[in-house]
Length: 484
Image (cartoon, rainbow, N blue to C red):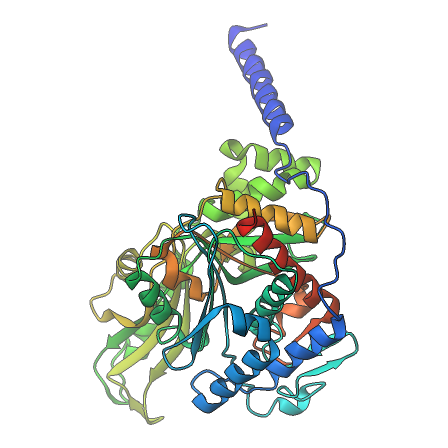
């Protein structure tokens, strides 16, 4: 055998050996836990009715404050042990902060989050609902109404779990805070942000924060047949930017080309063609480190050897809009305006682009990217800072808090795969980031692709069986995180 050929053969053998060894060592990251016995936490239909009662309050973001106060009174009357044992404070007029004192003062507290507000029902669609959106009905095995998924299910589920623990005589070792903001859907500035400021003023340092964000998916994670509980370790940032193009106007019969609209259109086309670079990093990379071992042999081999196959994995992910968002900062034009008369060439055309920022990128980097790609002095790029926020840090999967969360999920939901991931939408958790060692975004709703369209949409609902699981999950998590 010629020396050059021998080198190639030995190289291929070595490569094959490395791939095989790494694939063999790519073992499951799931914990070996014993599912907890199904323990009654109360009459399941009465539990469902209590959530349905909360859905009847039309606590739309920016709506009547009186309705929020009515919901406060409902919660007070519905959960008497919580009201009599925990300290309750009203913050920012309509948000609630509960404090459940622990027996060991040095232990760092935990914070469970949800929000009281809901999005409005799109005008003209109320008649499309199976049951009226604010009727709060229990029927056909489901609890129906706006907030059943986003996210009064979390508010009432947490309180239901605490009420059950109090009935059992449970006393937490560490202090537990429950925070329910009233304006999460509009950014949380008056609710969660003020609660966070209050806790900061008291010198509170949290062990972890748990908020909504991701869920137990079924048939959504490609290549995995079992349900996957996706736990958000981080969330993307957001910024809105205004593009303004200027050019000579005049009568449309004698146009000076290119027009402002043409210049703006060319800029937008450049941005769509040259999106920020994709990369498999942070929470998204950890997602595949957890689900990879549960996949078929070929996929398992690829994710066990990302040092070699990362380019192929990224190419597959960017081909789908849902997974593309996991691996890059995305830029989308959402508004455009230019011209006032059909025969008048405008001098100015404007567009707004919505950018969702991957952890590791920044607002400043996004602005620089847009200006570099557009590369046209006739187009300005300006920050619309009313809604901007940087991406979060990435929480630690090696922490005791993540282990407690993973153990709880697998105890309450046997057979479900637990995996870290990236939350694409904003949550109130970002307001508490400076107070907590780790922030997680997960609520154990069982969702399919069909369920996702119900969030902020028509026929929002949660299965009665799943809601009972959610209450059991919160009760078990408190025991695992704050028990003796």
